[in-house]
Length: 73
Image (tube, rainbow, N blue to C red; front, side, top):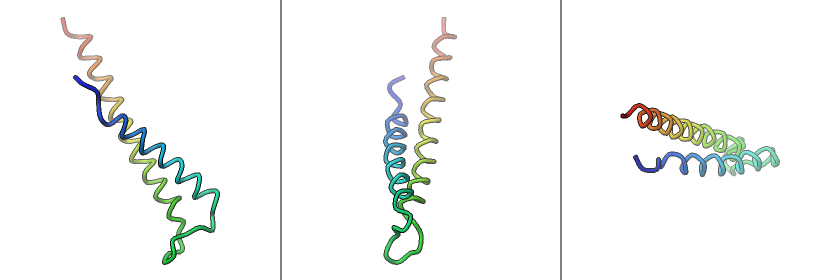
């Protein structure tokens, strides 16, 4: 089995999410012009969840592939 694409995607989303969350926490009064919400903070948290799910699925697939290879004669 080749490299799993979910791992680099997960790392990229987690990295971008951490930057967005940090900016959202550093600038609590910053919000989009037509909203009262801190868009960077909320989108960063959403991206963080998505990236974590991608990483979990990628690592789970790698561990299952490794277990299958160990069980083959």
